[in-house]
Image (cartoon, rainbow over all chains, first blue to last red; front, side):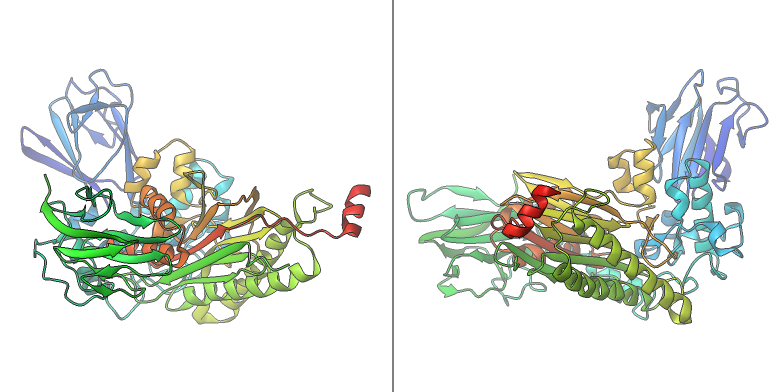
Length: 314
Length: 274
C-alpha cells in the first residue's frame, strides 16, 4: 500500500497510508490529512486510489498544488513524487519500492470479479486488506464492470484487493489461495539472471565470435556506450557506413538475399531472413540460426562484402 | 477451400524469463484461416488447462463448422458474415466447457483464460476477443490495434482518468474485466475487417505488448515480413530481452494474395434473389 510522508522544512511530521479510495487534504478538520496552515485551502486536494495506482487532483485551491516543482491539476502519482502544498511537502512512496518487492510478485493476470456472483464472497473493505496486497495471486472477475461506472468500478477494484490479498475464501478469488507466483522455481532467483544482461551491461568487450548460439553467447553489451556499425567494403557503395542504432537493421537486396542484424542487450546478432543463400561471416556460411557478431567480422551478403565493427558511441 | 496458398501463418510461444509455467496456448490452421491464442490464469497448472481447452475446442469445432456453413455467407439474422456467428458459438462452447471443468474439479476451481481468435475468409478477417489478448494489423506502414482490451486500465483510459502514456507505468496492468470460463456466460467482442493483400496481423498475449513497445513491434513486423517464423521468434526474443516477465505468445498472419471466396454459380444466384 502506498503512503504519503508529510514534512516541513525537511522535518518529517507524519506518515499517512493511502488506505481509502478517496483521501482528502486541506486545512479544515474534516479532511483525512489536515494541514492547519493559512496557505492551505479548506479543501485543497484529493487523492483517488485504485488498487496500486493513486491519482492526485487539486480541488481548485487558492495557492495550487505542485508535484516535483510543477503545478498540476491532475496527476498520476509515481513512486517518490514530491507533492507540495504551501511550504509542506508530501512524499509519495509505494509499498513495492518500500518492500523491494519483485515485480513478478504482482503481475499475474487477474480478473476483476463481481462480488455478488459468489454469494458468500466476503465484502472485505480495502481498508482491512492485509498489508501486502501486492502479492495477489490470481484471478478475480467482474463482468458487471462494463455497465457500472465509477463507484461500481471502484467497488470492484476494492473487492479485488480484498479477495486477492486475503487467502481467497470460496468464490471471490478463484483458484489457489495466494502465493504470488505459482511455482517451485521461485520468482526472485529466476528473475535475476533474466534481468541481469539488461541492467548490468558491464562493458565486457568483444570476446571474439565465441560460440554462435542464439541466446547465451553475447559479444558485447549494447547499453549505449558502444555502437555496432557496418562499413561496406566492396561494390558501388564501398566506404559507406551504416550505424546499427535500431533494434533491427536489414542488409541485402529484398527478393534476392536479406539478413537482419538484431541489437540485443548481449550484443549484435545476424540472422538470415530471405533468399536461397545464407550470409557468410569470416568465410563461413551461416545456417538459419542467429549468429553473434564479433568486432571486425567480415560479412558477405548478396555479393557485397562488409565489415562489422564496434565504435564508441559519439 | 484451402486458404494456405493465400495466407501464411507463423507462431511462437515461450514461458518467458520469470514464470515457471507457460499458461498460454496457441493454435493455427492455415487451411481454414484460423488462429487462436489464449492466455490462461488460475492456480497451479489450471491456467494451462483453461487456455488448452479453449484452443483445442475452438480449433476443432471451427474446423467442423466451416465445412458445413460457409463463413462468408451473410448471417440472415444480423447481416454480418457467418464467421462472426461461428466465432461467438465456439467461444460460448469453450466458455461452458471451462466453466464446467472449473466447477466440477476442485484443482481447476476458478481457472479462466483470455482469448483472441481470428477467422479469415473471403478477403475479410473476423476477430473475437475476451480479456487483454490483442490483435494488431500492419497495413500501409501503419500498425493499428484492432481489439480493445477488457481491462481495468483500458477502462481508466476510456473514462479519461489516465492517458495511454500513464497506463504504461501503471501497476494495475494485470487486471482483466472479462475472461473465458469464469462465469456461466461470456460475451466476446466480435468484429469483421477487410483483409487486403500485404496486410499482416499479429495476435499476441500481454506478455508481448507489456514488454515490447508498439514501435518495436511495428519495426519487427515491417522489417521481417519476408520471414514470418523469424519475425515471430524475434518478437518473443525482444520481450525476453526486456525482462520476459510473463509468458509470451504470438501468431502472425500475412495475406500473400487475395482470397475471395469461390462462390458457386448456384449460390451466387441464391444471393441475387435473397
